[in-house]
Image 1 (cartoon, rainbow, N blue to C red):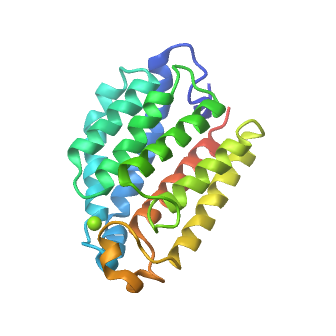
Image 2 (image 1 turned 135 degrees about the vertical axis):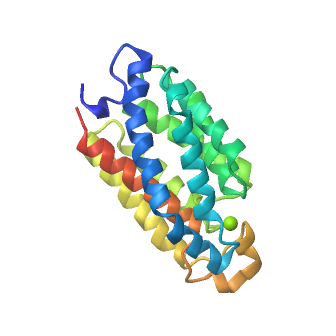
Length: 220
Ligand SMILES: [Mg+2]
């Protein structure tokens, strides 16, 4: 079984094991991006976004043995709860909500269409929790178009779907740079946020890109 099968086995815990390899990739990525994300946040916020996601990554790594015993949906939900509990700022509750809502939507043996639907449910959860929408210059400017692209292409070729998801995320990120922040601390700097990369949009782009790489390389 290749890793993108991310769930074609009939053993729920085995499916989760494959997904945990992706979790490892994301945690390593976010630990490595700590300084970059802190720097982006320092420019228009309080400089803690990288540190917050590094803390989330460490807590998820500690949780790994527990997650390995759970079904896919349970593991993603549990990971989301851990992120909410371990991370302060806005990013912990928002990324945690993304995962919790995804986990609730996932069946035990999710296929690409199930992952696309779960991602959409997670993005809706982020919008509700943050009382924000696309165009507010947040992580949603990356996550929402990425999710739409994945949903639109989920029944087509997997590589095309992943490429469309990544391209939509990159476009969303580039567009958000020119926006004025309307949420979070960045909203207080107003016009000064225009032209700056939003740290949440940046971390979302990093994660979407890593997911696309992982699933694309490990298909079948
Ligand atoms: Mg911050």
